Length: 369
Image 1 (cartoon, one colour):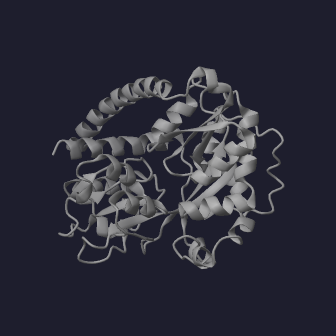
Image 2: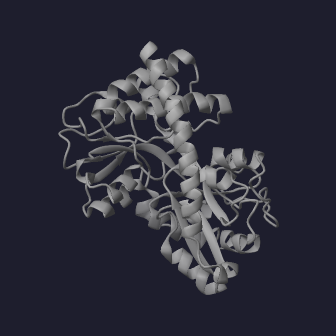
C-alpha cells in the first residue's frame, strides 16, 4: 500500500505538470493550425476525431454554401475538453463530444443554445432517450460499442474477452494497446474482475489498480490505437487494442491489410453515444446550424454512417443503407444484445479525480520500466 501511495503522489504531481504543459502547447499549436484570419468569416472550424465525417458529406455542404470546413482533430478527450472549456478560445464553431461531456460542458456554460432546433421533434431517432443523453443543447450524431480489435494474422488464438488483455498470454505479451482515459482504462479491468464498469467503491478501484499494475509489463502503449498506428515506428508490434467500433476500418487502412478484427467481449461491452455541440464562444452559429441541418438529412446521414462504418442514430437513415451494412451484427446489434450493453455512466468531479489518479499512476509505472 505504501508503494501505491508514493506512485500515486508522483503521478499526481506529474499529471498537474503535464496538464499545464499540454494546456499551454495546445493553445499555441491550436492557434497555429487555424486558417488565415482573412477567410475566417467563411470557414467553419470543426473539432472532431480523425476521419469521423465522410469527405463526400463535407464536399457537398461546401459546394452548397460556398463556405469551407476546417477540421481540427483530437485523439484525447481530456485535451478536447480543455479546448472547449477554455473561455479565451472561441475558434471552434462545432464539435463532436461524447454524451456525458456534452452534458458536463453544458452545465458549465460552454455550450450554446441550438437556436431554431427543436430537440423534442425528433421522431427519426432510433432511440428517443438519446435526446436526453445528449442534452437539450446537443444533437445526437453516431453511436457504437467499446471493445477490442486484434490482429488475426499475429495471434495464435482469437480474442473474445476483456480478460484476454490481462491473461499474460505469451502471444500478446508486449503487444497490447490500452487507452489512457480515466474511464476507458478502468472499465475493462473492473469487468474482468466481474465488477461494475462504473463502480467507484474504493475496494473495487484498488482491485482494478492492482490488475492494471500487473498488466503494465504486457502493455506496448496507452496511446489511442489508430493514432499509435499512424505515428509510431513500432506500429507492427501492436496485436490487440481497446478501441471504439469502427476503428478497425481505419486501422486496416493504416497497415494496408485487412487484418484487424473487432470483437465485443463476452463479459459485455460499453455503448457510447456521440453528440454535436456548438461552443458558446462560437461566432458562426448560423454556419454551424447549416452544417448540422445538412448532415442530419436522412440520405446524408446514411452515407456518412456507412462510409465511416459506424451506426447512425437516425432510423430513416438506417433504412437507406445497404442490407449488408444494416445486418452487420458488430454495427447494429439485436435488441437483446443492445439491452445487454453497459452505458458510460456520468461521474462526479471527485469520482473522476479518483480515476485520474489511478490512470496517471499506471502510466508512471509503465514508463519507469
